[in-house]
Length: 87
Image (cartoon, rainbow, N blue to C red; front, side, top):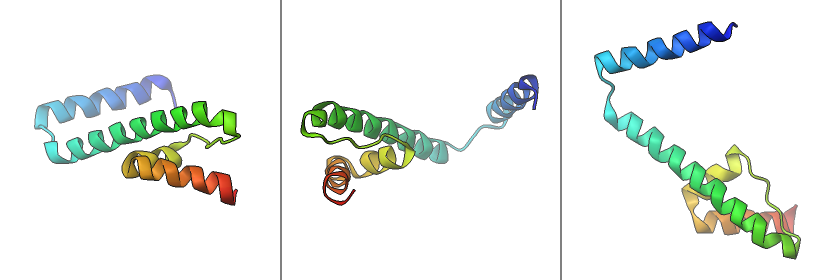
């Protein structure tokens, strides 16, 4: 597809949401989930930075960042344990 068409569809969707008014509950949930995934990615980055001296490296992708973000510190520790002992 042409980039112009993709940008036009996105802009039209945003204008439609602004005119009709979007329900705030689903948008709040999606925003909260996105923030948790970003925080999970940052926690995994810190784990990789400090764990490199112990030979521990957990890959950062959408699944591991989601697990780390939703479960928090226990999720990061479980990913580290899986990486260290199982894989």
